[in-house]
Length: 123
Image (cartoon, rainbow, N blue to C red; front, side):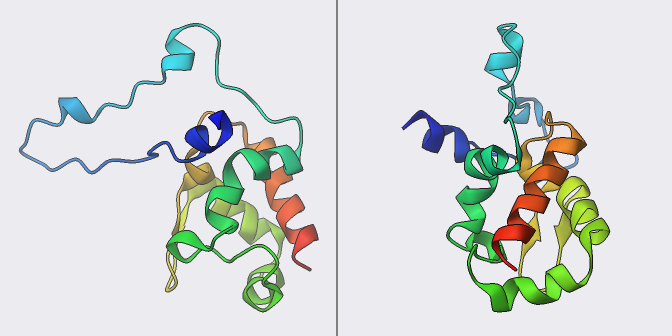
């Protein structure tokens, strides 16, 4: 159950100019406790820890894992484009991809490994 709770933690909040936004600061309780965020070992683990929460169900316009028709045009753009969108975030006609899937503390190489894993399972 801890994996599910960790996967659905809010990754963003909206701040409005001219209003007190101090309550919107997200505090990473793990990092402040000194334990640091848990890092996945490989692309599959990253997918299971983060990506699957949206790509498993097609949330927010995310192409669903296993839906090759949805993945084909994305894969055709090449891994460099997929890496850029996954790392920096992307808003398209179908929805949006938050930067690093909301796991902003994860290094880029883990995000690339997750992209590689998703490309492999959706070819």
